[in-house]
Length: 90
Ligand SMILES: [Zn+2]
Image (cartoon, rainbow, N blue to C red; front, side):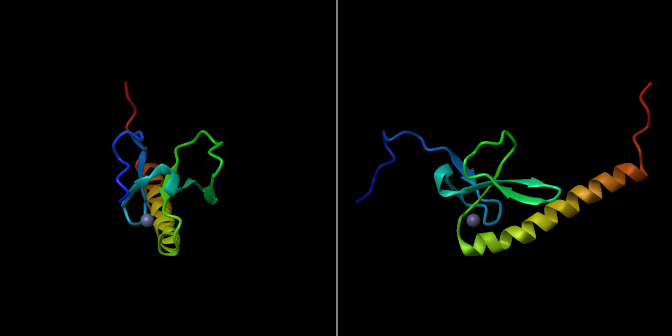
């Protein structure tokens, strides 16, 4: 019986962006999203807002789809604000 969630300390939990399941931080792959694509950051060196994904094939495959939807959303938002610039504040 492996019941170790009492004193062992609260493991930080993060959500996989693909399957939305919560896992221990150490069981997930950290990455961040750049306009050029995804960058994995296993050393956690980069101070940037990170996303997390399960290190299994299904989620990694779903990650590409997720990335595209993220890019599309970002692109759409930026093009909308380009077409309809905010009214100037006085
Ligand atoms: Zn997952």
